[in-house]
Image (cartoon, rainbow, N blue to C red; front, top):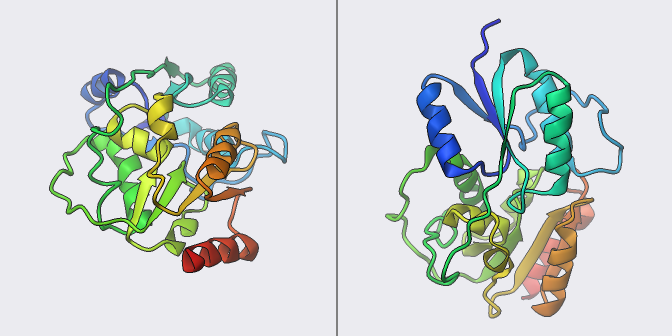
Length: 244
């Protein structure tokens, strides 16, 4: 079988993406973070971050087709990603580690047209992650007046995002990624204090610490999800949006 996939997770360093696209212009790019129906190979403990599980399951499922893996391992991702990159090396993958920790000068002046647009929240988050590789200009998107905020990372279960109205502004790691600074702590921590905001992380992710702190600080709703969204989580979010 011909190897035709460049796999990655998080947001690899910009120049590394450009160099790899130039070296492999016909390769298919696959984001290993995303739940894509690969079989659960039980590679990790049951109580572990669903996103890291996705990385293992997707990588091992696609192993015969993967040319190399671009693997962010710094503040722009997490320690688990570093451990994952080393284990995948041991498993026979070509892994290029990436540390992308640039910071911006003014967090309020960064360009985040997708995060502020009138697209549905799911479209916003999917477009932000898709644009890591595409790197297109979305400045033409119309800015709307937000009524709610969503802070966090892309959920393993993207249906969670469908519970929010289009007038939801994106904050957290997703916003930092759109701005091009995935490792900027101040940008990741920024929210509009006047917006009722849901602070989301995957269960067993270290970002739950920051999400819980910010939810308390801004009187938002803290949500962590282990894998897929259940009726209880849906009810909490729907009630928060309706009552606020």
